[in-house]
Amino acid sequence: MPPTITAFENSPDRGRGQARDMRVRWAFEEVGQPYDVHLVSFAEMKAPAHRARHPFGQIPTYEDGDLTLFESGAIVLHIAERHDGLLPKDANARARAIAWMFAALSTAEPPIVELTMAMLFERDRNWYAERLPMLQERVRVRLGELSRHIGGADWLDGAFSAGDLMMVTVLRRLNTSGLVDEYPEIAAYVARGEARPAFKRAFDAQLAVFRAASQS
Amino acid sequence: MPPTITAFENSPDRGRGQARDMRVRWAFEEVGQPYDVHLVSFAEMKAPAHRARHPFGQIPTYEDGDLTLFESGAIVLHIAERHDGLLPKDANARARAIAWMFAALSTAEPPIVELTMAMLFERDRNWYAERLPMLQERVRVRLGELSRHIGGADWLDGAFSAGDLMMVTVLRRLNTSGLVDEYPEIAAYVARGEARPAFKRAFDAQLAVFRAASQS
Image (cartoon, rainbow over all chains, first blue to last red; front, side):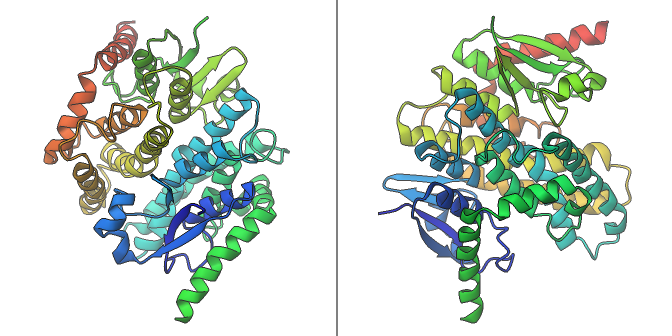
């Protein structure tokens, strides 16, 4: 039996591939491994059966035999360690690719989530107009640094790796912010990720889930 | 030659062990490996020589021969993979310990940083009184979930691991917030981490750096 992951029964991103199961789907597609998907509602996510998989009541999770994992970064790393295609063979290059996974999650994603959450949930607050430029500026600092690092390269460090997979999915969360367009190197980098056949298969799979839910 | 890490020449936390080099120092102490420290000023952190080590101009970094790494999570994982003491031998337990490293950085830390940064930098803003309870509530949700997970156990999943090391250092960032005291299981968990001899050696080492800087 292939591993089973959990994903939103009805994703709040309306199938734009910004939920964190997208990272795990993409990783499976890159390494050519099949997977099953168990869809969960928002109520199920917070119920004891799912909390046993994920103490924080989120998606995705990963179940394979007697192993249960949570956290998209940990699941992608687990897949990358067990199958060829997402980590370099050279030990130093492998360590650097893993460092980029952590950079995506720990340095790039927090200010991006803070901005996009404020755009979603604080738009009507009286402080929004004053805070928005501050949040945008924090994201711009990171995008500028990342843009200078990428320069004319295709990927973050040599060949495409799990580090790029994580970084592209993190940057895609900015889709509605307009900020990525200010950095042509980053826009091109994200587009390169989205053009990969494995990305497209993963994207289509999560979109099909959303379309089925919205028709039912 | 032992690996060299970078740390603040003059830590903004005034030696309370909340800077991210503390995680790496603690990991080295747990596995009994020596390390050198290269102190950097805030100006040096943003200069090209350090950007070559760390594209985002932060600390810590790790240099060992021809390998340079950044991101505290990646450095701790690298140390844990090469030396006994921070990851279980059993493959499934090892994967779960790594999942807790990601959970510390990706699920627990972002709302904690958002709260503590607001307490530092937005205290004088007219929105502070209204936003503070919202930020505290986001942290409480995570602390409540973590507290229920820990329950009566000593550590997150069996024996002490790199997952605990990362989680304890993330939770210690709440020191000035008063929130940890609302969750006795979490306060006791953090205290267990701080009581480890390796933690104490790492803490004393970073405190000595701060004291030397403040006397010069």
